[in-house]
Length: 443
Ligand code: PMP
Image 1 (tube, rainbow, N blue to C red):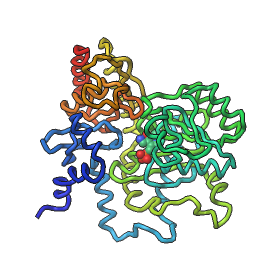
Image 2 (image 1 turned 90 degrees about the horizontal axis):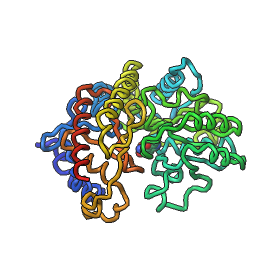
Image 3 (image 1 turned 90 degrees about the vertical axis):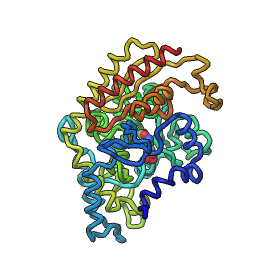
Image 4 (image 1 turned 135 degrees about the vertical axis):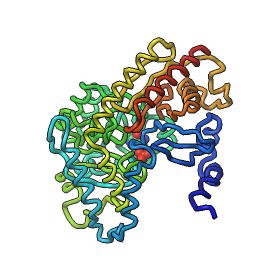
């Protein structure tokens, strides 16, 4: 008899189309995305046709179904340890909180003590919500700012901080007081502080979905100064950039002032289980939730820091050694250089930017009528650039699952696993050069 897993892998893809999201299934079909993944193999995925594919989405920093992580979770499941604690005094959350704070306090510039409290939830968006609520309760102010082009998640608070467009606009009215200012614009930031009502500024050190756009040094300096002067919380959404992705443990660890809150998610659960965290200072937590017993649990979620998930996070942190983060920095720098050199002469290539293994390849657009979304029968996407998605389509066939940035389809987002072999990256650069050259001939 087929196991449950086998049955799901046989029928679940069609069930997804029917019961979850038909348009996602149709899009995958039309764009030739390798969608029927049935096996993980050495960090890659293998589809029904037997093609192995390297996933560049970035959630699987240690490779799909990393053995050390599955093994740690299996050991926990085979034990008789409690996995949920009715008193909420949860040793798994406790030990992970201690470890994350201690690791975050150790920076490339030595010990910079900043974090002594953690709140756990499941998604990046919930970590953003925790920061919005912390900022309001600590400062007594209402206004929370983000930057244009941001991606902070899809719950109502984080959605209000998102870039303008389909992820945000249809869902109004938004949470009052939450809005964005122009990206990395120092004058706009200074002007926003003038009214004295800012509770927090939430920023991504590098906007990934917004087109792999790093904040400028000047803007970060002003952000650090103004938030301190006005007693507003500086919140770094490191859901994408954190945990080694930028070539440092935290992309913000060298900022002049350490953020009051750091948000982590994505591969915190080793890519296997969902967990997110907000790291902050004990004083801030106590101001917010430590004044009386009644409010001590005023912000919570039922499965905050539940055991199996924390075990996966411990296993992920075991893997995330200083050596591995150095490797991300080294191979990321080499990859960026190789992409720059091999694509430099191609007219559809504009630039490559980012840090570590969070890179963005900026592509020029074309107005060739055959290469428009209208031509492919997707008229509602007519305003979107096509070159990035056409390149993705061609790269799937070469064994690389790339993505364009959610808010900027002219940028190809490159976020390989930290353990990727250097030969495979060289193979990727070759494929990228050949496929973009092919597209250049068409326009
Ligand atoms: N913040 C950033 C910077 C993100 O990129 C994302 C998701 N891509 C989120 C928050 C939201 O995370 P989640 O999808 O887990 O809610």
